[in-house]
View 1 (cartoon, rainbow, N blue to C red):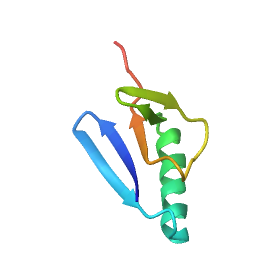
View 2 (spheres, rainbow, N blue to C red):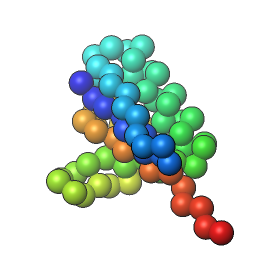
View 3 (cartoon, rainbow, N blue to C red):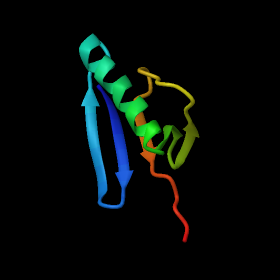
Length: 73
């Protein structure tokens, strides 16, 4: 099972999908595209406390984090 974690001002939401389920993988890929269009940055954990920015959808990433764009004022 793979998980996508979306962090925003209200907390976080988790979306779990099975990498063997093609429909679920397609939905997860669409979620990535939608979130990137909204300004989120995707990254995956490479070690405890460390992340690496993703430049494309990676269905093999166990955990993908989506960070919101920082807005200053």
